[in-house]
Length: 103
Image (tube, rainbow, N blue to C red; front, side, top):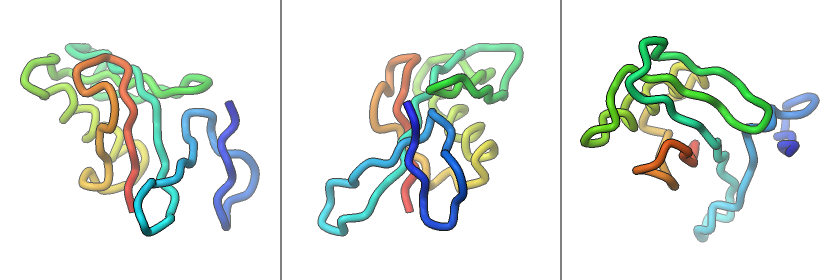
């Protein structure tokens, strides 16, 4: 799966990123990322790129949302964005998650 280029960007975006209509009345686009989470990993925090998703290793166990918090923190550092801009929009209780990067 190929991502779309954004204005000011040359070439193709990595396959794990894709643009989607935000669905609100602003009419803007958001970026969504598919991640495969490995909770309770001794390798974490670590983010690896696969063809069409990211693999996120976190030390936190999947209890009471701790792993989700670890994923948001690791992704924010990897992508260079504030953690408050990242939202789990799908798979909150699963290992495969969809993360939205908001403006």
